[in-house]
Amino acid sequence: MKQVIHTDKAPKAIGPYSQAIKANGFIFVSGQLPVDPATGEFAEGGVIAQARQSLENIKAILSQAGATLEDVVKTTVFLKDMNDFASVNTVYAEYFNRDFPARACIEVARLPKDALVEIEVIAVSGN
Image 1 (tube, rainbow, N blue to C red):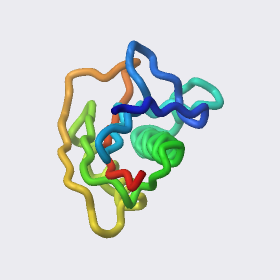
Image 2 (image 1 turned 135 degrees about the vertical axis):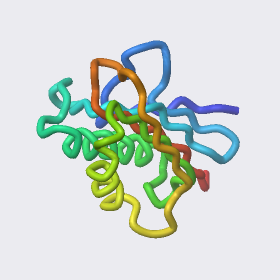
Image 3 (image 1 turned 90 degrees about the horizontal axis):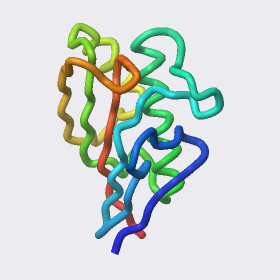
């Protein structure tokens, strides 16, 4: 059985997908662009601000699903430029600072809306 997760505290999906799906004890959060849900625009301030907004969007979606970042077991970080790895890693460490999830970080040719970063996660769910 699966449950669609949606919150107005994160940006709406820009295509035919859900913000997250809860199924079989896991929460699968779709890749989150750095869109501020209040304005519909990217966070201003470059890759650091964009990484922070993507992670804030993830936090909001996980909260709606009854979870926190501490429940995250796997992340995937997509970067437009691998030269931004250290900057994004610094922000990432503000959100994940112990019992780190498994992670992959991939440089891609292009992200939706020309974002600098997109992050997706998988979390465990106690519910």
